[in-house]
Every structure is written in structure tokens, then in C-alpha cells.
Amino acid sequence: MLFSSLTDPVDIARAEAAFEAAWEELATISDVFDERKRTKLACIVAALVAIAQDEDDLKRRAIARYRREGVPSFSSPAKGT
Image (cartoon, rainbow, N blue to C red; front, side, top):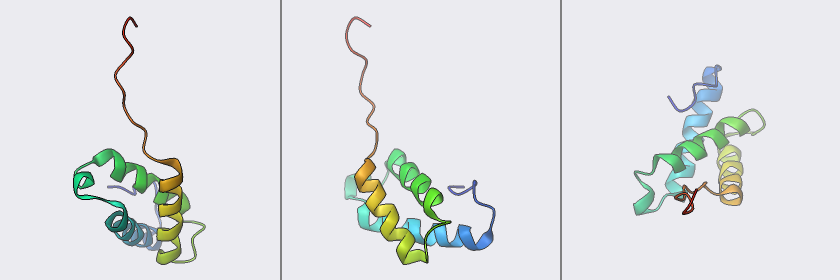
């Protein structure tokens, strides 16, 4: 479950709705199966759910933070290490 850190059913419903709407706006065809990006967005949504006014506000804030922070890339270790 993406939002296991949340306990309030209303917060969970808001988070799920905002997450799906934000993912639909952010995801490209190549991102559809990228779990790192979905998990990153879910963490952002969960962190913002308590301060958002409604699902649209939560979606807007989550997209803004996602774009600002980006997704960490996993690069291969440098040679000789």
C-alpha cells in the first residue's frame, strides 16, 4: 500500500486521489512502469497531505515538489572503487 504511513481514512482517500491525478499528469509513456518515480511521488503526497486544503491543492503541491526535487538516479560506481 502506497500510503501505509497514513492512518486517517479521509487522508488516505485524498492522498490516493491526488496521487493518481498527479501521476497521470507527470508520467510519460516510458515512466508507466518506473516504480522509483511512483514511489517518490507517493512519498511526496504523503508528506503534504496534512497541509493541503483539498485534492487539487495536494496534487498541485505534489507536482511542484516532484519537479523541484526530481528523482534520484542510480549511477554505476566509479572505476577503481
